Amino acid sequence: MRNSSFFKIYLAFSIVYLIILLSGYERFDLFLKPILIPIIGFGAYFYRKFPTQNILLAALVLSWLGDVILLFTDLGEIYFILGLVCFLTAHIVYCVLFNKQKRIRKRQNKPLFIFGSVLIAFYLIGMVSVLMPHLGDLEIPVSIYASIISIMLLFAFNGFLVWEKPGNQLVFLGAIFFIISDSILAVNKFYAPIPKSSFFIMLTYLLAQYLIVVGTLKLNPKTVEQTV
Image (spheres, rainbow, N blue to C red):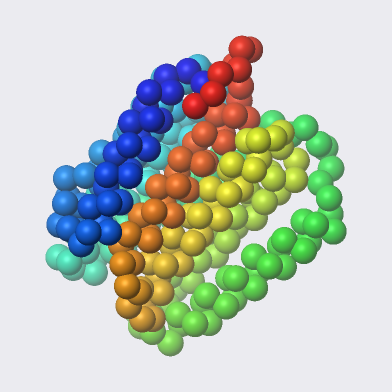
């Protein structure tokens, strides 16, 4: 895949960042976290033009804004809410992105889709039920956010059933990691502290963004296929 250097740099910086988090030096967030998504964004930007490129870039920009704003949550709850809004919008944009990808199958496997939808619904109901008593004034915003990320996962799962391999697998796996990352963040913030939560949140988040971006590019291949 063209301009694979950006993806290699992203992976290298992500590993360094995760090692720093694991070592307990979370104060370096302010310097390292804001540069990660722009790096992979450049990789998507300098890839050849494809129909949904701007949608993918929009989702990455919104994710980056969310990353930056959440760095300041210690200054007030408003920063958490604004970060939530950015990621909420990013997930909506990802839904649009997934919906516009080319299908190789006109019909999905309906029994499998229904089964997957039920599992996602159970996740949503379970997560909201666990968190609800602890949310206070954030009951509605967090419930809406949980619903949107579940819908995003549903779009990715539908794509898994109708898109071409390996892009379908990468995007779906990326969506799962996104759900895991957001779930860890929510449980840690509202329910009970999780040891090394920052490390696990960012590990799953960085994997999620990488897999979604690379998967989307795989769904929009060049004439001559290369690899990241």
